[in-house]
Length: 269
Ligand SMILES: Nc1ncnc2c1ncn2[C@@H]1O[C@H](COP(=O)(O)OP(=O)(O)OP(=O)(O)O)[C@@H](O)[C@H]1O
Ligand SMILES: [Mg+2]
Image 1: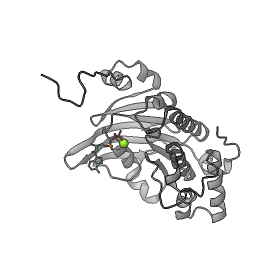
Image 2: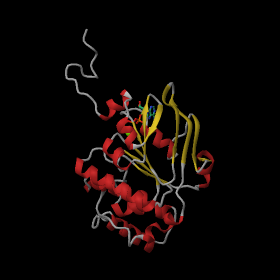
Image 3: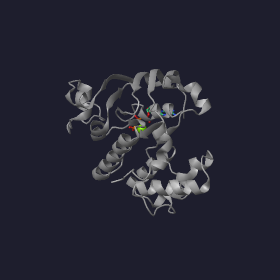
């Protein structure tokens, strides 16, 4: 288990800032004539974990890219602390730590250089301080000894932890995760869930996770939304989601398996 008692220095900036809120108003994203997100409205409370769930292809990653500023909305508004991101981005007022599904590490760089990249590029600290921060972060996430190896030598679980380490080193205002537990065995997935929940409890960084992992949503999500056909119908607490009688929700949480009528085959006449 990680401890943060000796790592206050790593998060001094984070701990001195108030957590931010995220507001999404009438957000729409379409590619040519294909509408992926039609009218998304939600609010993420300061310091909470919000989980956006939805079937494969429903637009979760598209949504995250919009929030991270990697693509632009077709219409609608994304705000942090009620400030339209379209304008605040230019001043780099808020830092978004995006933890990609695949880790998105640079394969030609060592783990150390991957982790140091953001701090070096933004000239946040001198090289000695960067060395100290990256080493502390690796120790904290029980990744000691991997600084000089290459990303291709990591297991899937280590890759996800390194991606989290890189996000945390940015001391972000918002942490965004794309499928943090995908492609992991159940135990490793559980350890990543614990880690995200623990980090949130310690640092209160506003966190938005897109995932179809029901266990993740139920155990660490403060609020959960389900994306379907470009809309979010309702925002749930974990208990309300569990008790919902909405057919789409029930089927999403406990899908039936019917070998006689596979969903991806046309119905037999
Ligand atoms: N750059 C793009 N141009 C055109 N269509 C795109 C683009 N990016 C995504 N899409 C489409 O948007 C839809 C949603 O994709 P997205 O990757 O967000 O799904 P997802 O919910 O993240 O799925 P998964 O759970 O499988 O990761 C898909 O139909 C995809 O083809
Ligand atoms: Mg995706």
